[in-house]
Image (cartoon, rainbow, N blue to C red; front, side, top):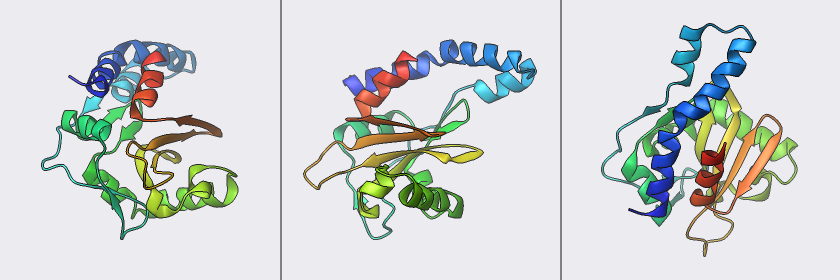
Length: 177
């Protein structure tokens, strides 16, 4: 089993611990337990077959699956965790054509200096994850050059940016909190 598969499994298995802390905070804000449970339950979709290239924000350009991304998509399709959806390859194709997603992509490009959409061409970016009901919270895969095999990950939540060297670095961070 690869390091990526190990980290993905760890992230999925530790979802209840992450959810417990979030649930505590939501209870303090007055949310009911049945609402909290429905919102925080992790849902892991079945992997798609066959695996295909990754669609970018340029409809004419796809990127091959890197070894880490192959492991991610062999393990699962879409993953829903506490309102955030890690997209399947099929979902990625739909998302990059979605008006809501493109509106926020364009907003990041025009109004967030040095954000991934401002730094890279659409052909160098793919949408990895999006927060449901808050589409401005997006996580991108970025290929800064064609020589890069493993894309970097740029995560935007609220007005916070996190940049990770690759999927494993992102998963290590996700598992830690």
